Length: 225
Ligand SMILES: CC(C)(COP(=O)(O)OP(=O)(O)OC[C@H]1O[C@@H](n2cnc3c(N)ncnc32)[C@H](O)[C@@H]1OP(=O)(O)O)[C@@H](O)C(=O)NCCC(=O)NCCS
Image (cartoon, rainbow, N blue to C red; front, side):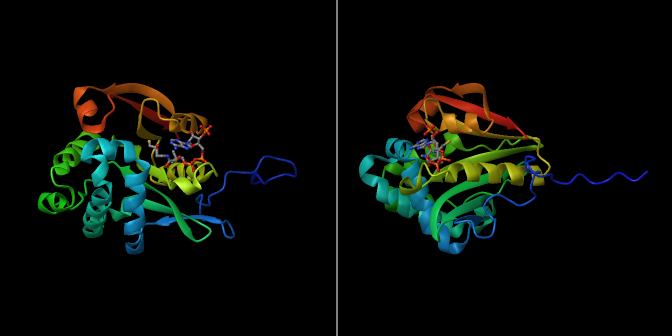
């Protein structure tokens, strides 16, 4: 006997939607792939959202240099653009994140000479910070969420939550069974991640992370999809 497909009933919780979060027509929040026009926004947002570790790495008086260095490097690094998503709220760029899957070994085009011209001796700090936080070990079937940030003027409106929903969606579409991220111990964002279903699996770090990022303890948080 043929089985009737399940259909939504009045009053029933809505059925899982195939629509990617951040693509619903009419929604003021849209999430799309990064394009060339986003380089300046993504670079500035990364430095601003993670200003504590950038300040630690390059020095407080070189933050604009860090933005310009990121603009120049990201601008040349088209090979890594596919990882970035940009959240646009009412037509204005509001947030960004990077999504990395197993086997994605694309490298950004970083030039030491160029970094020196923007950062002087802050270049060493930037290189150490990059080395301490680069994650090249994404297990099969898992997705790594990196660099999630929302511009300060847009925070607390639920944009971060939708970006996390979107990352879940893309990870599932890639056949992943888990998604994970690294977050500094004590970062308020841990509450958001817990509400989204992430749990702390372990805390790691040590003297090199402390020297390179200013924080000794980092949480690995993971969500089963
Ligand atoms: C974390 C972040 C991406 C969340 O985006 P958002 O649009 O503000 O998030 P939502 O509105 O969906 O959810 C609000 C939650 O975000 C987190 N949040 C808000 N402002 C934050 C801030 N300045 N720093 C860290 N987390 C923050 C909190 O958990 C907050 O919940 P709470 O009010 O119960 O504490 C954004 O706040 C941000 O860019 N923070 C600075 C960069 C950062 O810490 N990124 C995470 C690195 S792992």
